[in-house]
Length: 238
Image 1 (cartoon, one colour):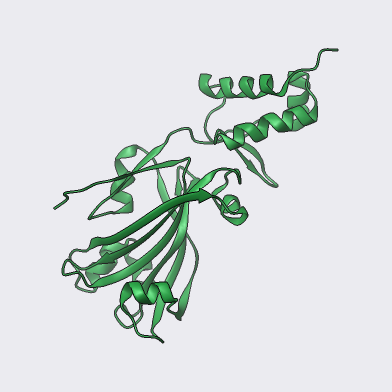
Image 2 (cartoon, helix red, strand yellow):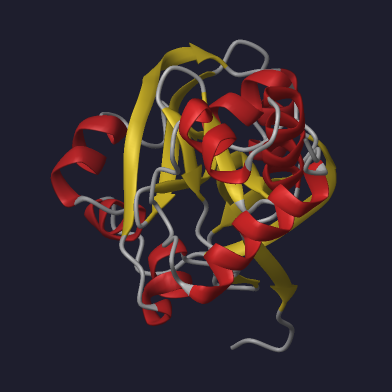
C-alpha cells in the first residue's frame, strides 16, 4: 500500500479552496472522512491541516471543527481621522462588534499617562470583538475618563457609534493624536479569541484620540489578526 505524503493532502485541500470547491466559512469534512478520501493516515492528515492553519487558510476551532478562513486581506488605513466603519465600509463586508465586557476601574498607568489623568482617576473601559463577515479580526479595550464622559457606556449603547456618542457631549470632531503598533506571535488566548492558529502573528495597535486642540479623550489597545488585515499609514489628511 502506498503511503500518501502529508504535503499531497495539504496541496489538495488548498487547491479546493483556490478552485472554489471550499468557500470561506465552509466546514471541511471530518477527520475519518478525509482519511478515507485521501488514503492517508491520521498523523499525515493532522500535519496537513496544521500547515494550512498556519498559512491562515483554515481555522481550527476546538469543539466545533475546521473551517475555511476568509482569503480576502482587509485594508485598514491609520491616519489623522481613523474610523473603523468608514475604513472598512467600502470593502463589501459586514462589520459587526460584540461587547465582551465593560465597567469602571482606576485608570491603569499607561491609560492615566495617555489621558493626562490623576493618580486615582477612574475610567470607563469596554472590551469588544470586531468581526468581518462573522470572522474575528480584532479585539481590545477602549478607555474614557469617567469625569469627562459620565454615562459613556449607556450613551454608546444608544447611539451605536463612538463618533455619534461624542456628538452627544458636544464634540463635533476628533483626531488620532498618537498611534503605535507592532507585530508578534499570538498568545494562546489571543489565538483562541481570533480563531487563528497560535503560530500566526497578531498586530498590536495602541492609540490616543484627541480633540483638534490636542486634548486627549480616549485610549485604546487593540489586537488584530495580522493574517486578515493589512495596515497602511496615511499622511497629509485634513
